[in-house]
Image (tube, rainbow, N blue to C red; front, top):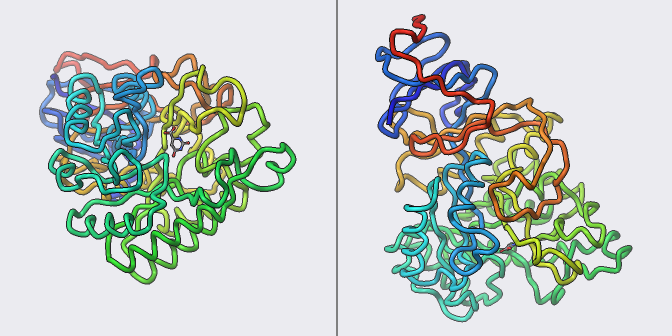
Length: 447
Ligand code: DOR
């Protein structure tokens, strides 16, 4: 593939403390040259992607999504899900194992990896199950799953209610060096609710899911991680109380990392009207107070990363009664736009936001797949280009995802992905982005 110069953009690379206008050259699938100001590379055989007025940052990394394959291809496939990821600016995505069959054995991991290699447009890192069949009874063959290439373990969609099993998983994680990613919800406390337990659930007459259900499970996991020294990663933190517990555990040296979703950072239980099944998600949308604690947790590094929990469902699945609909929000394609709202309102700096989507998740993944989450020379050319100020209307008809289930349908967001480069290939470009196939001698050279 011909080399590509991304020229004159605002290069934001929080892992290296960079925020300056510059250009970068991609060749051989890697970043091969970087220059600030008006500098140009010495070679001239490249196409040019003009990025004036746009932000250029490392490709976003999502530690938590659902690609639904194998088994639920009517909701999403690796082909459609990775295209949706690319439209959202994500170049590395970690997919959850609540498929059918679940990803609890090496053959299923191999299936996902080979599909991703042939049909995916971004890097896909599968997550293996903690327990066989996600049944919470017996550990999955964790060492075999590591050999097959998992990035971590989770029974996401369900918590690990069985405490001795969670202890064993954390013990194994110590030797394996990979995180145990827990969906923290003590479901025994409420036995099947549909939304946050509070005044809105009371008014609507919908069974609630109390914040305390999350607190109990987060606290149990932190206690076990402290006991055995394993690595626990708390998925989709949604409550202020969980932020407090994680903060304390980090202070005393427990090995814990944590994530929050764009929807838990930006939407409250007020979105739930009783028939808006697109706002039905697990954990549920909470309160303004929780949002403020989650934002503070991001700023203080109590919460390490933002992860989408992209959970596509078919229209048929989400139609009908609120109580019957499955939990989940299709999140890849609105993530940046909704999160930029926090930047535009002054609640989060752009550098912090980009760090939570790039170098911070890269730290959790480690360097097995090359240097991710950075624009350093020699790193894989995974790059996201976005317009921080562009207004756009969320049109689910234009989604690449099969999942149109978002409570943001029809909303205006400010901040839009304009192009995504994965391993050196332009895998998404907005129609307004034109790559200039210039003849070498015609490229304007100003050193
Ligand atoms: O809302 C959710 N949907 N939360 C989860 O934990 C699982 C996910 C899904 O698989 O649909």
